[in-house]
Image 1 (cartoon, one colour):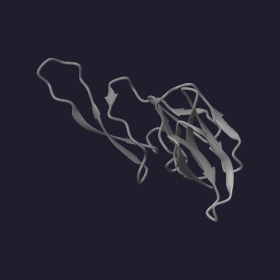
Image 2 (image 1 turned 180 degrees about the vertical axis):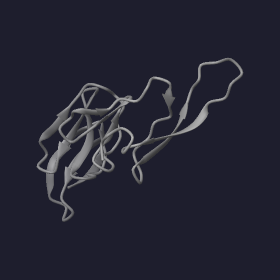
Image 3 (image 1 turned 90 degrees about the vertical axis):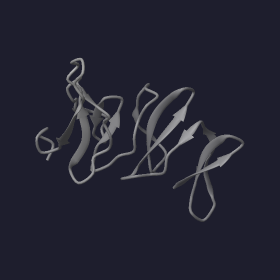
Length: 128
């Protein structure tokens, strides 16, 4: 399934053009690792390829799945919606995993000190 846009809303269709879901979503990401992030009524959730809500949640910020995890707010969840990694509150600029790592920053919260480059790895977090 792939998302399509019509009248400022998104739906889902097959590659051959057959509509699977009419345009009802305010946001619709492409399917990655069998899941797609969509927005409906100011809430976000993940749909599986059967267009069933696989992971419901209420945050407005989420990322696509990458290497089995998705960043929701400041937590990494698995495909069951379980929080797998919750980084320290000093770690900033979180992104999706790539090659088992996330390049981010560590904020020391000290005047006149720059943030340090930081690498968060799935191995260190116990996910691999």
